Structure formats: structure tokens, C-alpha cells
Length: 362
Image (cartoon, rainbow, N blue to C red):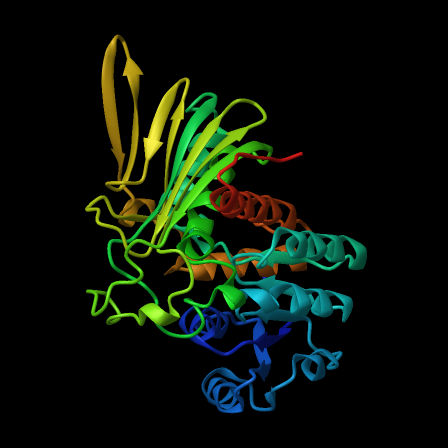
């Protein structure tokens, strides 16, 4: 699709997720100009503007000032979780379309306010669940939509790291983030699972969370030892979700766990006609002619999505689809309503872990 205009984008939050994901993807889009950069640390915004900005790019330390620029069409909100709702709602009310990084918000109440603001303003809002745009995810979604798995009544959402605790930024700060691996990477696995099932009606949630390894000194870790005194979030969390139609989902999330069964942002599905998992590539399993089968899908050169002759990264597909939703005035691939359900379930797991009781959702 050819864009009819060049979209002017403002980026709020110029830290790791901005520089590692959003800004590189934005720089690869012909019909995008990043014209405004905001960060509470001015030097970060200046560095991002120098590398990725247009010639006239402006730098801000207050997002409210950025939002006053009427020429900006889209803002990407890339801050710690506790600021997602405030900034996203302000962006929508300022007449901007908003891409907010995952999770939607620190709390389900804030996520709901964001969805309501999008409806009220008529502006687009999407959440950065980029794992939907991987090749295995896109293929499996087609399988599910074609009904090849039948009725999916059991699923597992996988987000297990053995020792990969993010020790930078505010990842270990419960006040800023709202939680640890569950809200950080568990959110991706849960979003992927619900999307495959096309089931957004949870009924009851039971959850547990642990601080078993977080207090170890000089621990082995991908990014160096963590400081136990600063590790205020869980190191692992687990949930069981029963949907209104009786389907069951188990969710597992950890930054540190004594397990060799390591998978992140993946799901396993069990349906009445077949099953699927992402644990060793993408595999479809089932029964035909009284015999069991396992098919491994080849996602190499013959099955890779191309756009204008170039192989696309998942983050590029995510961004392209987001711009198409704005251009064609249609729902984004990740809708606010879907992301809100993810936030409700995550919050219910935390609540259940805190109270020791199941949480019933209306």
C-alpha cells in the first residue's frame, strides 16, 4: 500500500525500547518523519534526535509541550508502565493517534481509561505486542482462523527465562512497573495466546508469584548480577485462567527459574481437531487415519513475508500495519479492547497471588 501522506511522529521516552525497537523501525519507513523527541533526561532525547530525527526535529523534556505541536499526527509512548495511561490519554485528547508500548498500563483501571479515551476521541490506539507479527505467529493465526485446530479448549502461554533479569532502567521497581516478569514478558505470551484462540472472555483466575531467587547475591545472569535490595518485583509468576466457554489457559513467566524448559513469547494450543506449539519451530500435531502425526512448518525463504522485495522484520510489519490502520481508518491489529483484557488477567493473577484466592471477573 502506498501512503497518501508523510506522517509526522513524536516519540515520548527515548530509552532502551525506543532505541532498540521503535526508532529503527520508524527510520525504515519512507512515509514517516520523526519530528519530536521527549525524555525526562534531555541528553537521551538529544541523542535520539541526532540519530533518528528529521532536520527540524524538536527536543522536549515535558511531553505536554510536545503534544502542543498540532502538526504531529502520531505519538509513540515508550515510557515506564506507570506513565503509559497518563501520556496516552493526553495524546489522544490532543488529537494524535497513539502507539503505546506493552503492557497497556500498570493497572487494569488505567488500561480501561485508555480504551475509553480512544473511543471518545475517535483516534487510533494500539499496544506494542510485536510478537504477533513474527512469521510463526502469522502462520499459526491463519491455521486457527481456518478452523484447522477445531475448538481450542486448552492452551499454554510460555514466558520462561532461566537467568535473564533486566538489571537496567526501572525493571526491578514495582512502583514504576507494576510487577516483574509477569507484566514484562508474560504479557506477550498471554496476548499471543488469547489472539490465537480469539477468546477474550475470562471468567476466573488463580495465580501465584515468587521471590525465591531474587534475593541471591552474585547470581548468574545474562546482564550481570542483580542487586537483591533493588529487586522488589517477583522473579516468577504462574496463572491458570478459565474462560467463559470453559477453555483453560496456563501462563508461566520468569526472569530467573531453575528450569531448562526455556521459552519466551510462545504458546501451545490444544484443539478438538489438532494441536500446535512453538517450542521447536512451529509444529502442528494431530491424528489422521487412526495414526498420530507431527508436521513441522518450514518458515525459511519459501515462507517469509516480503514487502517491496525486502524481507520484513516483525517490528517493521507491526509498524506498517499500524500506519495502514491509520491510513485506511480501520481497527489496528492489536485493539485497545484486546490489550485491556490482557491487563485484566495479569492484574487478577497478581491479586490472586496476594490473597491466595481465585479472582472472578465479570
